[in-house]
Image: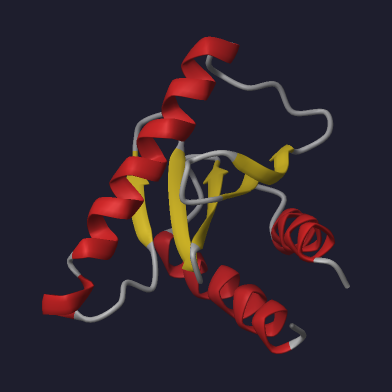
Length: 124
């Protein structure tokens, strides 16, 4: 399976894992989205301009956290919990998977997403 198709499959698996996931994308080290987007039928809470800026900023923050790996070991995930949304970022090789969830998504359920990611990695 081609890499783009694998990345698209990962985003689809994140949507299937929990109905509270509204957004799932894989982005590269230039912070460009290579697969994914909004869950069909879900409207974004920000404007297209804000969305593009948020994607870029999440990429920068993920890159910053990656630089800490030498001292702290590799990150499993990064969570940004807000009043209206949660953003969870998972490193996947030289890319990152970013998902957003509804605010009632409990942090304990991040383990469920990690299991989906691990199964996806094993099929590659």
